[in-house]
Image (cartoon, rainbow, N blue to C red; front, side, top):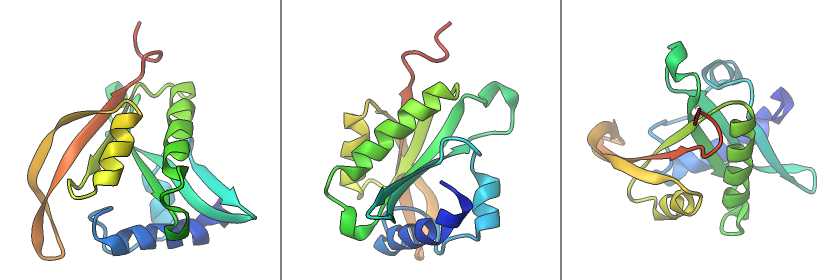
Length: 158
């Protein structure tokens, strides 16, 4: 992912926000805010016919050094490309890149209503850590999230 991809990445994020089941966010951030809040490595875009149709990226879970190998991830697919296995390919590519970058744990918070995303993560080796009840308000109602994590079998095992 390069800064010039931001317009398409932002548009795909906006589509995810519009579903009501992808994120607590109500609108996409600016490039500067998004760039500041995400790791500068492990940023992936999927391109079809010269058009960005999906993306994946990592955000740190903490600024503390002990958690340097733990990241929260995002995977978004454009509406017209959903249901074609692109999310799976992006997630697997992100897992490979994250391990190459020394990340030993990936985590995600998913709305329980987002069953497709939950199935995707379980199929990719994530496990449910727990359900966070009424963790945040979204569109004037309390929402739960399912906390998922994937521990690397290669990184952080020494």
